[in-house]
Image 1 (cartoon, rainbow, N blue to C red):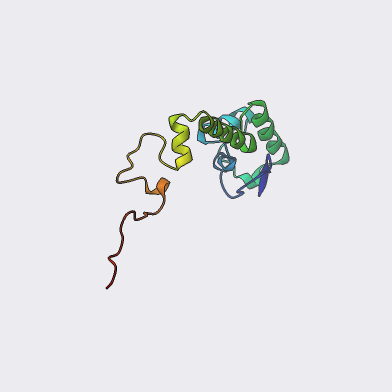
Image 2: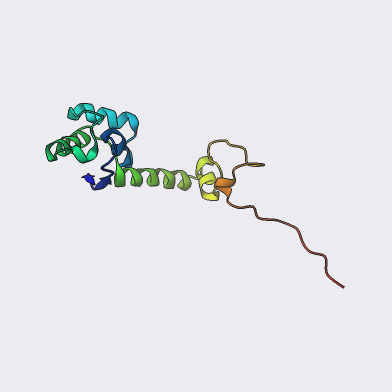
Length: 126
């Protein structure tokens, strides 16, 4: 497996697909990085030379992409900020409810978790 910026990318995939395993790099960014590094998109990751790997790393660093730990930290700080100022989105994040206006009466099971029965009591046996 090729290692790019501390991330193991799968060696049997094309390099434009393998770059997507780096958190923060999607399809368009992967193609842009490969164009900057002058590397063919169809080359498999296992077939890359050390020089080509260093060109990819240089293109990522030169392009000033926010990836991996820095991106995770930035997203976490954004959520903390929203929760700290107690805005609508922050409150929805705190309560574990959908944030972007989805309905919650019948759906949103992924965000809300399994159903919890509320208010049903058994009749006392005599």
